[in-house]
Structure formats: structure tokens, C-alpha cells
Image (cartoon, rainbow, N blue to C red):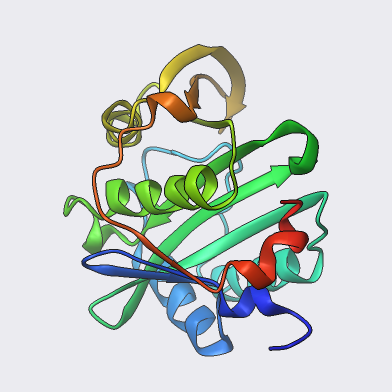
Amino acid sequence: MRHFPLLGLRLTTPRLELRLPSFEDLDELADRAVEGIHDPDSMPFGVEWTDVPAGELPGNVVRFNLGLIAAWRPEDWHCNFMVVYEGRVVGVQELSARDFAVTREVTTGSWLGRAYQGRGIGTEIRAAVLHLAFAGLAAESATSGAFLHNSASLSVSRKLGYRPDGLSVQNSRGERAVQQRLRLDRDDFVSLVPVEIHGLDACRSLMGA
């Protein structure tokens, strides 16, 4: 798309493709959300967006992701990549930044359908967007975070070189929940998979780079 080249930005790894969504991708993504993302008794997200009636969840997923594209500005952007595995959309890997031209810092977040967890996909998709950030956009640092009970997310962060960056406390489903903040400097990034970036040059100005 000539006037919004971000729709042509893609990352590829040996098993996966990451891309901004088409309408068909969003339909599939909504299906994964309805099929389940986490144990209903445990909330891994700081925003409890999965705690809605099942009939509302698909539309919420579609509107949220379209809203991120509509609200995109070079000084405040959220790149929600669709994770495509064996031809299916299986989840989301986010890379976002505010005032990137000045801060050179990005933030990540992700989720996968439960049927696709435990296969190393979470590590591969985080490595892919960190490669985009550090090698493609010349970021200096990346942040992330996870509740202390989210051992899978914390394990991915350790593998990729993140270091603890303090704790924060919040209300999660009416209970006290402690989140581990994490920070990764470019020199500490451990790249675990080969990553190819496609279509970045036309997007740099839209990302404050």
C-alpha cells in the first residue's frame, strides 16, 4: 500500500512470518482468542481483556487491532504483528514505542493461542521483533514485563538477555499481583534465531527512525 507501507513490513524466521494484519488475519486471530489463551483461573495480562463474555471477545480483538493501525503516529506507535505458523495466524507479537526518535527504546508484548504454546514460538517471535528493533531501527534498549506467576514469559526474557528492572504491584481481578519489570540493552541481546526483515526502508519515518 503506497500511502501506508507498514502493511508491507514482514519479519521471517525459519518457522514463522510476522506481518501486520489483513481482515482475514484478524478473523483468524479472533478465533485463536476464543479457543483460549490461558488457564481461566490465572490472568497473565495487566489489562484483563480476556475476561469478557465469549460472544464479545472476537469483535473486541478485531476492533482493538484495527484501532492500533488507525491511531499510528511516528511519535507513538504499536506494531501488532500477526504470528503466522504453518499457514495459520496463531497469535500476536507487539513492538511499540513512544518518542522513539529521542528515546531509542521499544516495548514488547505477546500472546499465543494455547494450542500453540510450548513449542518455542514465543521465544522465536520475541527474538524476531528485537532483531527488528536493534538491527533494523537502531534501538538502544527494550523493555518488557510479566507477573511473577507467568514463568513461561519470564523464561523467554532470560533466554534473550533481559535483566530485572524492579517490581511493580497492581490490582489483578481484585487481588494484589506483582509484576517483574525487565530491561534489555542492545549489547546484551542474545539472538537465538536467524531473522530476515522485509519492507523496512519505506517504514522508517513512520516509526521515528
